[in-house]
Amino acid sequence: MDKVRIDKWLWAVRIFKSRTLAGEVVRQGKVRLADKIVKPSANVAVGDTVTVTKNGFHLQFEVLKLIDKRVGAPIAATCYADRTPPEELTKYQDWFVGKAQGEFRERGAGRPTKRDRREIDTFKDEDFSFEFEDED
Image 1: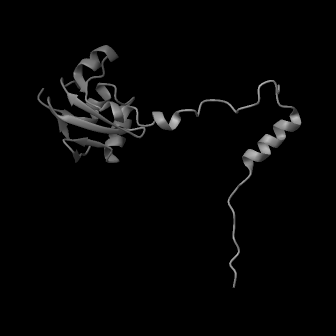
Image 2: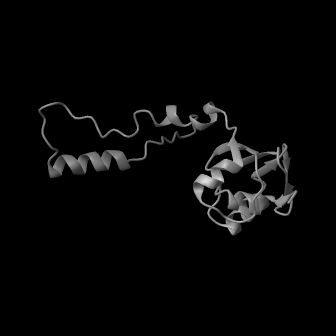
Image 3: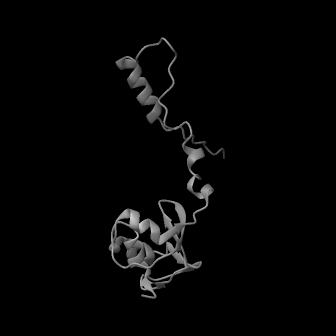
C-alpha cells in the first residue's frame, strides 16, 4: 500500500470520529496536505505533513504509517507524529485564566439573599450599550 485517501487515513488514525465527518471537514477546506487545500480523494503518503483545523486549533501531523482500517488508539498513535507547535495548543490558555472562578463576594457576607440574587441577575442581564442622540 503506497497511498491512502486522506479522509480514510484521518478516520483510521482517530483524528475524527467518523469517516463521514473526516470527509466533510476535508471538503470544507480545513485540511491541508503540504500547505495545499485538498479534496477527500487526495492520497496521503508516508512522510507527508497534514494540517487539520479542528476546534480552532491548527494541528499538524507527519504521516509515519499508512492504514486504511480503523485501529485502537495505541496502534493509531504509532501511525503519525504530532508536529503541532506547543504555542498553538496553548493559545487559548491566557483567555481562560480567571474565567472559571465564581463571583467575588466579601468575606463574611454570607450567601446572597433571594433579593440580592435578583439584583445580581438583573445587573448581569442589563444591556450597557449607550445610544447618543444626534444634535441637529
